[in-house]
Image (spheres, rainbow, N blue to C red):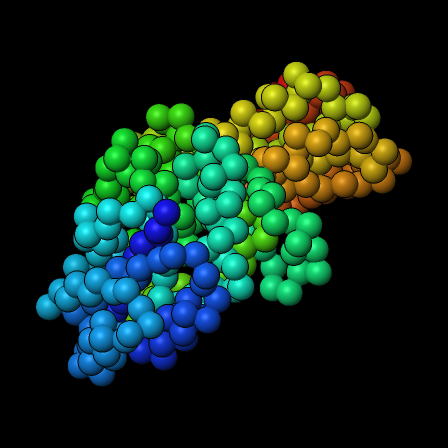
Length: 326
């Protein structure tokens, strides 16, 4: 049961070297590298040709004479692969011990899991206890993204309308979820990512422009991703309420759960990714109100609560807030 590790490369020689050396050092599961050289300069090109001749590795090297963009490179890798699993891996990453084994262990644990992200932390003293454990997430991110072959067979390749990058991974997860798969985060799999190193060569305003352009493409296809605040006063969160909150996450929305210190949180919330905020019972209303009203960036699109008195109070303080009862 081999995994093909697909790595698009455009220069970043030292990062690429570190990435591949960490794969060699920390990967025991059978794998092959599928490297797409996206028009790199001579030094990086020569290094990648040397990797292709490395006796320690199985390598498929594809050379583009110009940079075709991240998404097209990923699709080239997917077309060149026939393995049971593919793992998209940025060249600005360093994989930890047993990273791939843990990703595949989680994928194999449930037929519904189609896409897996790493979610572990470096040197976690609970790593053995966490082995094979996972939480459900709304979307996986493409810096390290394990995909079952059956998912690729059903939904095809990445949408090349996203060109260089941004939102293509979210779009792909959305397609996978549409046909019945879920995304998971493997608790014991660790991969370090130099966030957005690949975009540092672009001007900041160019990156922002590209991000907004692709976000609008995604929203036009799938609708907006909402930030939802769920403010729960009940101390016993029942199954009906749990299911409603979990549904928002499965639809891909970002859920922020506010609850009292004395509340009993259902175990189910350990199986789905939700940002959780706990406040003392006596100050609960005030703490949550301040958190919501003073949120300057990325404001909440919806506020949902099980307490009508709190809803009325918040509406009086901020008439523009969208508040509902759950």
